[in-house]
Image 1: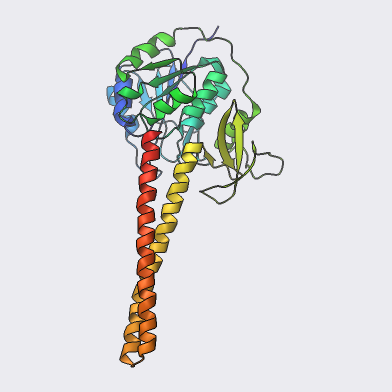
Image 2 (image 1 turned 120 degrees about the vertical axis):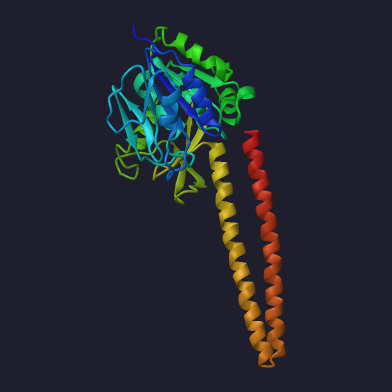
Length: 337
């Protein structure tokens, strides 16, 4: 009988400090491999593996594509790559963004659930929105174990709180107690693994770029919705597995409902920003045209350009108010998540 010896950890805002504290508390003789997906900007130069290696009793590294898995090691995802698991080795791939992030927690968790089943322990730490929730659901469905940092203990409670609300989490503990818990769980025998629905396998292969979702022989999971993808404009398929709804387009971009709502807010704000900039350019143009008409003694034309400028200024006020309200609603959605 195999043991629970695959630990996957996901975090976002506040994650660097939380990961340092958790890794420092891991047992030095941990008979398991640990994999970490921390949200980070694609162009960033991540020092996370170095920071964790300084405090962790285990060896910490950022893996390369195809690297073999060893127990007693911590593998940290790098910017602009999904960290994914396969039997005995790791994939580092530039698969489609999930909730506009790469590495994405859901991608890591899903791959662990697909390939390691009941041997997996999934841990969601501090962070915004709900990345990791779908991944924990996959881990639990495969027979694995799910853990969250207790929301009251998290610097940013949205990620663990969403997981608690939408999944039957096995353990919700303060960060200070998670290291000892993991040390106990990895010595437990794993139960039988449960085969996952085909949708999970297809999405795992999409993240790994094992095929292009636009290929004619590949059927993107789900059914077409009436919603377009904020990243590419294509049609989003809605996928319902175990009463959980998520979205993925033909290019492969994936969203949870909350992640999609935030992405739509960002696109609206960007569009409104373009409209404001364009109207301000129009105000400058109308002013120049009005000055030209005044110089030539064309009072009627001067008045027309002045009226047009005033209308554009009113549009700017309306658009800026809409942007303020949009930011407010977006902030409330993230804080309430």
